[in-house]
Image 1: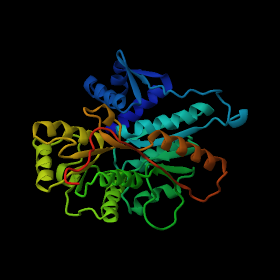
Image 2: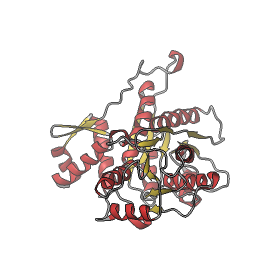
Image 3: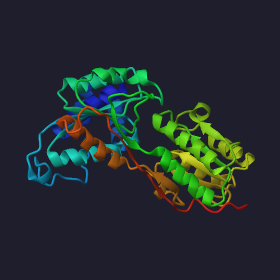
Image 4: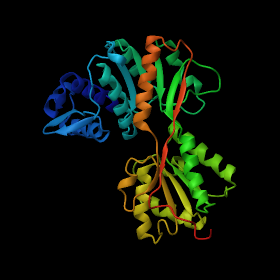
Length: 361
């Protein structure tokens, strides 16, 4: 049994019973205590479950239904189940918070399945959501920037679909509606901030291979061209360092040495975890942040907790979940017809203590 399948079954039990116990799951899944605890730890880390003695329970969001079963204006809201398929990644836990804040207000249900960035597995998981009677689907599939064929299986899905944190691939018209963070604009704001501080040599580290990483890289390259910044700076991707989250021994030191040799004065790092690793290693390698190197993280999940707090771009993850859920509801009710809708949510730039004026500015 794949880890994504185990975790989906764990979530199914938690949604049905409110909580799960390790001993119960060992029997249900036919795996060891160690495997069950590892799966629970991953779901707890993603913010989907909360740890309790002997197991875990569903995580409760701050949003509670003001009037269960009531829609806007006090009118009865239809009770429906929405299917959600997201990668097993911590990024999406806040997106799920946004989804649940809307469904809680209407008395609806969420059936959540986790993928593992596996394109071969995802059509089966989508079919499972449809088979359980979901009225509509919110999906974050594995797809590249222009790989239209990767989502061809969604053309036959009989319920409305909204992609979350994804754009419809390809240039031609399609039937999929989308809600995503405007990552390119978030990167543009960070690059403008660095340019205004006199930085012209701004490198990029983006180890991920998701579609969002593609948008971040595109925004960085566009900003360099638009602002006339130096183009001969490192663009470090997962092809060189691996997609993580762990670093190979000596990796952070090698990156810092490369940045110093390239006379880089600022770095955009996608995302927080890698930025924190480099911040910690900079101290032991004689690189002053922000004195020698201004550092901007892209994510802002952990950046504000760093020492010093990291300047960071913060995608509106919960807002993506809220807007996507409302859009899906409109599609289910037929209020938008069959015309696809594409919505982008602007990130915010939080300026903290890791960016400063370039020394040669």
